[in-house]
Length: 422
Image (cartoon, rainbow, N blue to C red):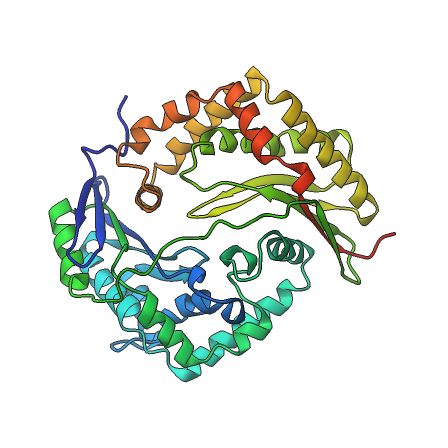
C-alpha cells in the first residue's frame, strides 16, 4: 500500500534558530500550500489578559513595516494568493496558498506579517470594535454561553483552559496596542516554529527559501511550552445560566480528558466517535435524539492537545426537556461504561477513521495541516504509515478500560444556558 506521507517522501530540516521545516513535493499541479504553527498561544495570557493572543494574531495583517492592510489585500487579490494568521489557546497558526511562480512572493508577505507587524493604532481600534461586537453577539448565543461557562467551571482560575481564547468584552477593551506589540515581541519566535510546504516545489529549494526569509529571525529562547495538569472537579457540578427570550436551551457536560500523546488516546478517540459522532451523532444521536426525541442535536468531542482537555457532550434542547436530556445522556454514559462497544460498532468506527484520513490527505492543504500536527505532537514521520494499525489494533477491552477511567459521570461538570426552567 502506498501512503501519501512517509519518512521517505517528506523532507525534514531544522534551521539553526529553532525552526523545523517539513516539505512534501507534489508536482501534479502548479500550486503550493504553506501551513505553520508558532508557540504563541493563549497559554501565555493571564485571566486578566484573556484574548490577547487571539487579538495579536488577528492584528498581524493590519499593517507591517512594508505594507499597509489595504496593500496586503491588494497583493493577495492581484496574485490570486491567500495568507492568514490566528491564535488559539495552544498555538498561533498561519497558512497560505499561491501558484508556484508566486510562492516566494507569498513567503515575503509571510515574513512581513509574522516578523514585522506595526499594529497601527487606527486599525487596532477597528479590529477591537469587531472583536467586541462578536463577543457581545456570542453572549446572546446559548451554545457559546454554555461552552465558555463549562470551561470556566471545569478548569481552575489561572489555567489556560479556564478562559476562552476569545477573551471577554471586559478583557479585550483593556488590551492596549502596547500589550499586543509586547506579546508579539515575546512569543512570536522561531524556537519550536513549524513551517510546512506542500506542492510544486523541490524540497531543498523550499528549505532554502524558508532559510532566506526566516533564518535570521531571532527571539526569546527556552520559554516553556506546556499546559499544566489541572485538578478537575472532584464532584459533580451543575450550573444553570438563565437567558431571557430564548426558545432553545443548550447543555454542555463533560469530565476529565487526556493529552494527545496519552497512551489511551486511540481507544478514547474511537469510543468518542462511536458515542457521539459516527453517522448522525453516534449512540447519543440514535438514542437521545431519534428514539427519545429529547433534543435537536447532540454530539461529543474529545479535546486532546498539548494539555489534557475535557471529554465533552453538547446538546441543543427544548427548555422543557433539559433535565430529561441530561438524565438520558447520563444513562448512555453509564451504559458505555458498563458494556463498552459492540464488535460491529468498533469495526464501523475503524473503517470510518481510516477512510476519512484518506479524504483529508487528498489536497495539499490537508497534507500540510496533517504534517504540522504530526510535528507539533511528536507523532513521528511514520505516523501515517502506522495510522491504520494504531486504530485497527484498538480492542473492545481497551475501550472499556479507557471509558471506565475517563467517562466519570460522578465528576461531570454540567452547564445549561437558556430560558429559566423550573
